[in-house]
Every structure is written in structure tokens, then in C-alpha cells.
Amino acid sequence: MPSSLEGALFVFLLATFVGFEVIRRVSPLLHTPLMSLTNAISAISLVGSIVIAGGEKSQLSTVLGTIAVVCAMANVVGGFVITDRMLKMFKKREPGK
Amino acid sequence: MAPYFIQFSYIVAAALFILSLKWLSHPTTARRGVRVGELGMALAILGTLVHQDIVSYRWILVGCVLGSAIGLPMAVFMPMTHVPQRTALSHAFGALAAALVGTSEYYLHTGALGTFTMAALSLEVILGYLTFTGSLMAFGKLQDLVPSRPIVYRGQNVVNLSLFAVAVGTAVYLVMHPGQSGLFPVVAGLSLLFGVLLIIPIGGADMPTVISLLNSYAGLSAAAMGFVLDNNLLIVAGALDGSSGMILSVIMCRAMNRSFTNVLFGGFGQVQKAVGTAEQRSVRSATPEEAAAILEAATSVIVIPGYGMAVAQAQHKVRELYDALTRRGADVKFAIHPVAGRMPGHMNVLLAEADIPYDRLLEIEEINPDFPRADVALVIGANDVTNPAARHDRASPIYGMPILDVDKARTVMVIKRSMSPGFAGIDNELYYMDRTMMLFGDAKVFVGELMKELTGSHVRV
Image (cartoon, rainbow over all chains, first blue to last red; front, side, top):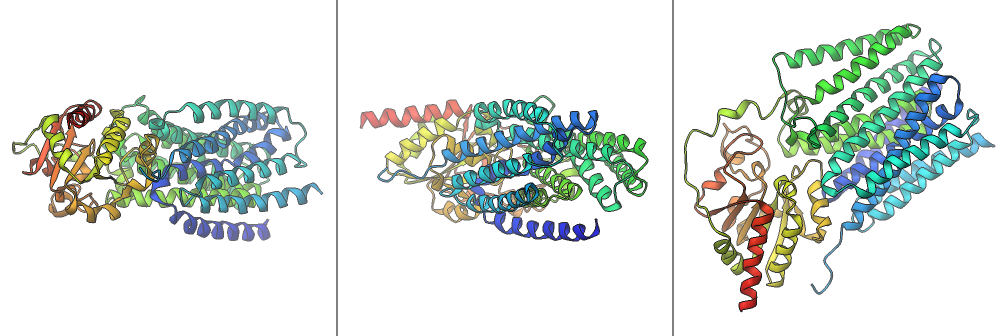
């Protein structure tokens, strides 16, 4: 698929640049939540796993796909929840204190 | 209709992911960022569920339920001191998912894959499997299941590099002859082995860099998966994750004045064992009463927390000390070195959990000009990041590393268990200065005693 190869590389290039620009601005204060959030986002590999697990094209692919769904889903759920749990703790000084 | 819906949901999801990271840049908007990220994820999953290749939902359902059952308790109950471990595990999960998808794609289409797809697939599988075992090893080291000191042996780098070269070489051959399915397990197996061997020689204090690097690899393998499946959303998300990990690795390396190669192949902390034991100099040790008397009179205090504080679980006591000093009208700030902790930003999370306001947590560039004006610099469980030798001693292994200018404060207090050297195995000349008071003891106990002195006298007044 030569036409889509070009497009895919294009997308990758642009996304990397956007990533560098956006992430450079994240305050070092939040680097841990940043890592858990990007981790949750990259668990979007769940969509690939879902298609394989639900495709049931061969026994091997169904088994591997299902394990992949488990792993990716653990990251989706866990990643977003723990990121929010951490961010909830970051508070400014209460005025008057 | 369905394909349009999928494409549309993916495009919106990609935009939401980018917005999510944009909003994460500041604590006031960060939680909105998480919401938006969740929305994007939900949309993308819904879109995928109508995919025409899906014939049955039973295994998807099983996987999702099991995955949530694993991920949710880990996120809800994991103590904040264990966040690095959880992160390492989630890198392992993410990488394994990518590697397994790559593996099934290969066996579904053996021989029918184009050269480019096969190349992306090899990259996905190699990065995925090596990140999987590498992250498990990092998890083991952080959790103390595996010794966290570097394990090195003669010829280690040669062994590792040749192993990696064989894996890549086999993969290249496989790209040219995709039908040779017997070679696929070889590539997978070597990558799994390489991941273990890569992390074994890395010491506990290098974990911030290693975790960031593994983060980047996991992201790149997800992006490679996007190339294989021709899925732009995966490419975008993987590229975001990959670039984030890369930026954090560079920041961590800079904070230690080291290069990637040095972290990965240096076996740091081994070489310098002999240095620093040469002369016996005297230190001034002080009691909690003496230290509290000085803190009482101080109007500006800078606390320098290190990983030792987290190990001693002293952050809540430190918060009480912060409250007591603030109530007395002192200006209390925290100086956070980028590598204070076991992953980037870890120390900030620990202090935020102890309810210390985030505007009191300052980075190295912001806080260093304040040290000459500070009455007291209180070092709790930090060592190498305060060593003035990094500024002037060209022979020191940490020469050139950006450090906190603790030695410029009027009085320096160091809470430390004993005089044993830090991670780099070198003596800290900070401890021998005339205005340094060594406070020997467990961080939590000692800060508790300081508190007792401070509040006790408060009642008397």
C-alpha cells in the first residue's frame, strides 16, 4: 500500500512535532501524571487488539488478541484513573493561610 | 456507513488526545485534560466496535472485563510511593499488547505482507517484546524483587549488542523473506531476552531515565502498530507517547549530566567505589533541640527532599513541619531536583499527596537564586544533587551535573541515617562545611522530634 505509506509517515511526522511542542510546555511539576496520561492514551492500541480478538480468524490470533485486549484495557482504565487521582492532590495554598 | 463512523471517531479522538496533553501543561487545567482524554478514548473504542471484521464480541468482552479488573484496583489502591512501579508495569502491558497484535497479524498474513508493512511489524514486535521484559525488570528492581544495584559482568556490552544485532539481522532477513515463519519466534525470543539483559546492569537511581526511555519505546511500538494496521489514530497516539518519553529521557539525562549511552551501557555506581574514603574529616553533628532553635529563628527555609525521604515515609511529618514553620511566619519552599525520586516528577506527587501546596514546589532554576538569602537549607534524604563538587571538582564523577546550591544557605542541615556515601559512591563535601549541621537519624523520626521541639516551645511562649 504505497499511497497510504506516504500518508502514514506524514501523520507520524506531524504528530511527533505536535507531541514535542505540546509536551515541552508541561510543567516538570506534572511529569509523573504526564507519563501516566500518555501511557493511557497510547493504550489506544486497544482498538487494534479489539479487531483481532473479535475477528476470530484463527485460534492463535483470538488468544493473542484477547490477551492484548486485557493488557490494553488495564492501561486504559488504570492510566486515566491514577492520573486523575494524582492531579486531584495538586492544590494551591488556601488564601489566608 | 460504519467505515465513515470509524474514521470520524478516530479523527475526533486524535484531536481530543492532543488537547488532553495541552491542558495537562498546567495544574489548573490538568484535570480537564484527563476528562477530554477519556472522552477521546471512549469515542475511539465505540467507533472500533462497529468494525466490519468483528464477528463476535465475547472475547472482547472477556478481555475488557479482565483488563478493568486488573487496571482499576492498581490505580485506586496503589500508594503514591509505588507509582513508579505501576508505571513500569503499565509500560510492560502496553508493550505486550502491541507485540501480541503484531504477532497475530504476522501469523494471519504470513507471506502476504508487503515489505514496508513487514518492516513496521518487525519494529513493533522487537520494540514491544524488549520493552515488555525490560519494563518487568524495571518493575522488579523498583519493587525490590530483583536486586536494584547494577549487575555487571565482563563483556556485558558486547554480549548485549551482539544479541540485539542478531535480533535485528534476523528481522531484516524476515522482512525480505516474509514466508520464513520459522524465524519469527527467533526474533521474538531474542527481543524478550534482550529486554532483560538491557535493564540488569542499570542501578536504582537511574530508574527515572530508564522508565522514560521504556515509555518512549512502548509509544513507538504502538505507532509501528499503526503503520501495520494502517490506522492513523494509533500512529498519532503512539507518536505522542513516544515523543513524551523521549523528552522526559532527555530531561532526566541532562539532570544527571549523562548521555543515553552512559546510562544504558555505563554501569554507573560501580567504578567509583574507591574514591572518597581517602581522608577522614570531621563533621558537626547536632541534636533536635539545637536544630529546632535555629529553625525557630529562621524567616526563610528551603527544604531539599530526596528519595530517602520517601523511603522513610517522612513526607507527612515534613508537611507538619512546613505548617509549623509557616505559622511562625517563616517562608518555606521546597527545592525539587529533576531526579529526586524514582521517576520524573515523582517527588512533586509525593509532596502534593502530603498536602503541600504546589506553588511551594520549585524547580532547580527557580530556587537556586534563593539559596544565598535562605536562613536554613534542610536536606532530607538527598545527597548527590546537593554536592558542591559537581560545580568545581573536575575529577568528581558527578562533575557538571546541575545541583541545588544548598551550600550557599546561611545554615545547612542534613538529615541522614549515617555518613555512608550516596548513589554515585562519592563523599559529599557539603557535610564538612563549618555551617553544616549533620542530624543523624531516620528522617521520619527526626522530623517528628524537630516538630516536638518547635511546637513544645510554642506552647511555652
